[in-house]
Each structure stands twice: as C-alpha cells, then as structure tokens.
Image (cartoon, rainbow, N blue to C red; front, side, top):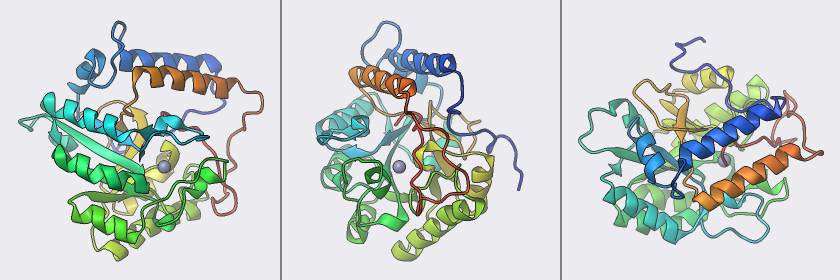
Length: 311
Ligand SMILES: [Zn+2]
C-alpha cells in the first residue's frame, strides 16, 4: 500500500549508526528551539510561544508522579502540581482543549487548541489527573498498551526499570466515563520498526480490536511505542483504519502535517531539558551501548530497547 508522502514516508528514530556530530547537532537544535537563546523558561516561554503559533501543539505526558527512586527515565514523570500549573498556564494563554483529529482545522479555530496525550496507560494518571483535567476543562487521550491492562510496564521492567501499575479495565472505564478518550499504543509495546511484518501487524490491528471490543468505543488514534516507525509501519496503521498516529518527533502540527507523523512536545522544565541532553549524550558515548535491535524478533521473546527520541 502506497500513499501520498503527506501521510508518511520517513523513518521514525535516528539511526544509531548516524555520526555523533549529527546527534549532537540535532540535540543542540532542539535545546535552542525549546529554550530559546535568552529565556530559561520552556513551557509557554518565549521560544515555545513562537513555536505554538505555527500549528497545533500536542503535549506528550506519561506519568503524573514524582520520579520514583531508581527509575531509568525520570523525565517521563510530571508531578501533579506541575501538571496543574501547566494546564492553568495554557488556559491563561487562551488555549482550549483540542482533539487529535482537529489539527487540520488549525486556522479555523477561534481560540488556539492544545491536545493533551498520555502514553502507556499508567494508573497514576487517573487519581490526580481526572480532577486536574476537569478543573481546567481539558479532555485528554490515553494511549493504552492493550495486552498489559491491569499489569505492569513489562517492556521497561525487562530493562531493569521500576515497575509501574497500568490502568485496569475498571479504571479505563472510569477514564472514558469522565469524557476522555483512549487510543492504541500497541499490544505489547513492541518496537514496530524491528518486529517482523506479521508481528507488527498484530500489534497494530489486534490492539485496536481488543480495545474496541472491551470498551465499546472507536479507537481512532495510534501512538508508536518508543516513537519508532517507518513507512511499512505507517502503511499498517493506515490499513488498520486509524485516523492519526503520534510520534515522539518534536514540534507542532501545521495543516500540512502528515496524519501518521503527528509531532509532539514533552513538557520538560529547562533544568530537565539540560539534564536530559546530558543523559542522552552519556548514553551515546557509553562504550557498551547496544547496536540496532534485531529485525524479525518479537517483544514476547526479546524485549527490544530503542532510543526514545525525546522520552
Ligand atoms: Zn510507551
């Protein structure tokens, strides 16, 4: 299946074999684009306000908690207080709640829209999240890992990360009853770019069907685990009947944004951003860093670590 390049076309993660200088340049550019040259404020700071004028921002959250001791990626955690202050800041700046399929109408909205997304379906989003979202009149979408509902984040635990409880069916129903949306984040959080075609197909198709059968709602949006995708993966997402797919590429979405390559922004503070850049550089320089994941393997038999582009 081939589609217009507006829909999809490139690979979704940096090649691990790319020159170090390229990684360094991209990381540096992202810092400048997010932070600006002169302001230490990132979230709705001067640089981000300029960026947000160009298209619809989709914010990518994961966990609403302070980072647990020993977690491998503390940058995926946002404290409930900070989440509340970020939504308040969005409202104060005139933003209202948007949904993923509204991005082509970017110039038709009377007020600017911001989309709130959560990846992985962590249970700690539910308890403080519902009240905070409600207080600020935001709707959000939670991208669920359909095969692990009510379990732990096995894909991270397999790499030595701290176990995190994932929403079970009752909690997902609570999320839906509060007016929020669910999307698919695959079946077992496999790295779709490195799975066999058959396994990638199952992750994309079966997760949609499983969530729709269990919760009786249409699952229209997909989110690539690890932000990892390529043209063949995009084709499968389109064939499965999703209307959009979220990446971990940094940026906002203009009218011309490819629907299966929606960009997102991780709401990091300036300190976190600098620490994350240092963290990534250290990982790139580590002599024992693993090579590209093997193709044709499955998460069920081999958990495949892959660099998240920004989380
Ligand atoms: Zn994920």
